[in-house]
Image 1 (cartoon, one colour):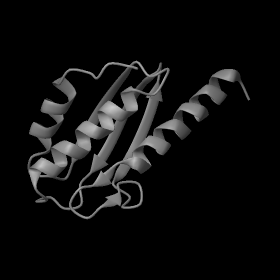
Image 2 (cartoon, rainbow, N blue to C red):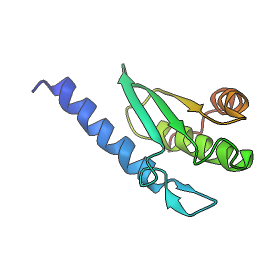
Image 3 (cartoon, rainbow, N blue to C red):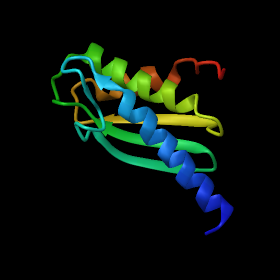
Image 4 (tube, one colour):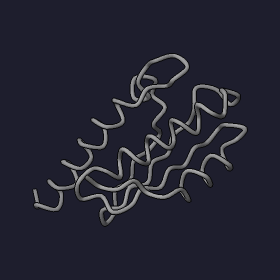
Length: 109
């Protein structure tokens, strides 16, 4: 196994650790447990995350919160240079994606 592959595996583990800490505010269950994460792609230290929400009409404020938490928490992982979140299957998906992906990145501590 190449060190690059190990790095990706390590980053993937870190990503899923972070994702499992993010809970749906409406029901208080982790988005990983709810199986809302559809895909995690890691390429050149940039991460694309596809996820869906519990229902197409769950309150948009919760959708924004989940998507923002995903982006900000994943971005803070050492070695990650960028994160793009793609929410699907929600009536506000386009607005959520635009707002979250264009918002300022948190500082890395």
